[in-house]
View 1: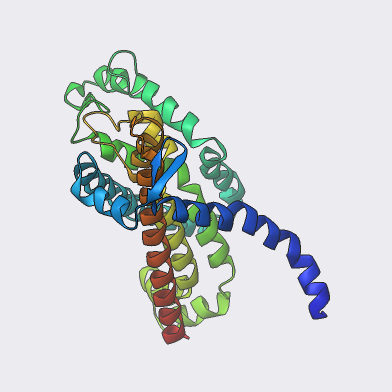
View 2: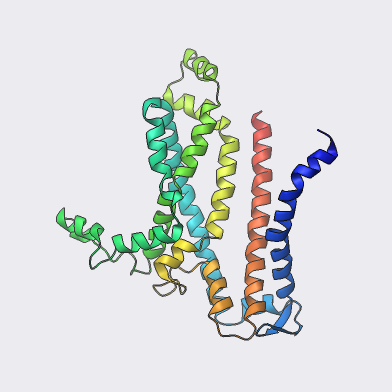
Length: 298
């Protein structure tokens, strides 16, 4: 295809990317280096807004706590969502007659808005009228009928579960598609060499899933670090109870729209830029490592 034709096809996407991504990013970066009085610039601040995040209350306590919760969302998603998703994809790969049905069932939750999913689970887990605790009590499991969203030590793990439950269909689809591209000859050769089912999966299937694992890992990390809708629906903008479900996006939201500070534009922009830099940096490093791993396997 001639270069001019290729550029003509790529131009609309490039324009949209510049307008919807690059311009807001550059704007937020510039905002973070200024002091603000409402919506009016009040002089050059340099790195003062970034320094304030680590030295002034409530930011110096809220920022590390919210960051830790984002990491917990990522670790929880990797442990629960992706391992269970890989197991389900492997199971469906062996059961082709039910594959379409269960793939549809597993992917239905992430077609619904995360905000709706969050509000739905708050109703299900309500200690007053929620059906989850009512079912546990009916089964004689009163000890497990807990205030799921009212316990500061438990609430963040409930959000990890809700988030993983909603998005589990994504790794199921991606791993399923990757497994469908693995030639049957490889597993048949392994079987002729005496490999059992576990050895065929671990020695043949799993290494060939490396590109899919890398993609799922990066997207899971990005999704966990920018999580907003479910934590907001469950714990509100304060990350209740007692900020036990606070995440960086909620901190940005509070700083920008609820802090009452005249310099909310500068501080919130600094939060956004730190979050972007961390997500972008880690995504680039992990992608590079996964590609290096792929080259070693091939």
